[in-house]
Image 1 (cartoon, rainbow, N blue to C red):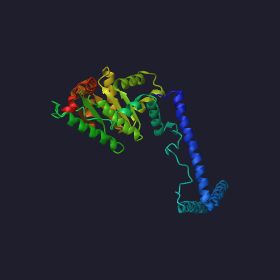
Image 2: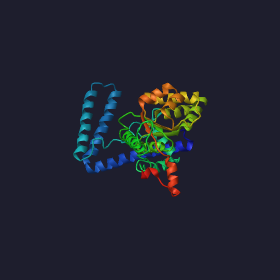
Image 3: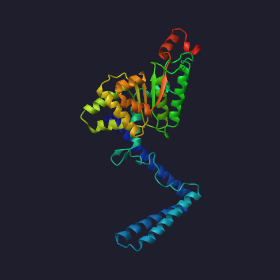
Image 4: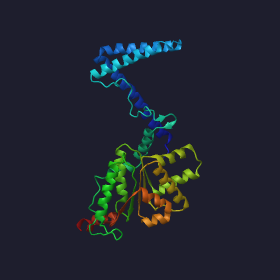
Length: 338
């Protein structure tokens, strides 16, 4: 999750350009407003002169004149707002406007990175990875129900593969629609190769396109990061990485159970999931493990957090990758014909 110096410089140049654009936009607004409303320039000069007079009297210790100066200044400002609105311009037309009002397009609030800067980091790292290309191919518009059979019955639930995926698809779509309003988590579990990762990609694309920060890890990759942070030198960079994982808008953990499981991974998974629940930050987990296996491998307390805070979506069916290979070889696709 850490940026190289060149990546950091690249982002800072973007923010510097935003500030320049903000200033240019304000100058253009002034030129347009002065052209439309000749009296506005004189009014601004009066406001400026009165502000200087106010400051001078304050320095001279003249507190008696302060209240009248405030009232005069207020009246001039209200007159300015009225002039702008009378000519179809907003009352804040001659104020700086920002892409991010919270940090005023600096990327920082005090010494802390703004939420917009953290999202920019995530977007840049993904842009320079292959995830963007994957999400262009794997999203809700390309998801197909053709590979799920109505005759494949899950012995655990008694539901067909088609019924299960239809339920899961709707739940995932609802998750993205209400992402900004509701705190939700999803566990996608079941057979190998039945679209769990594909659905997590669908969610990732929708949430990222809506302007939220998404961090996507395989389970093995996530635990590698945790190991470096926990057993490393505890630098600010490592602390920042952990904060990104705990605090991003959406964390996706793919293929839980494929990592080398031990007491470290068990404890770190609990800490991560628990921290994100406390922060009300949504998480998506996909796994081939059965629920009882999750409970036995990752402890009862971790399973308790998942079962009580996650929507559990079980997918079953024939491995879609094998079905596609059979099609390419000229075979039949049972799921499509049954």
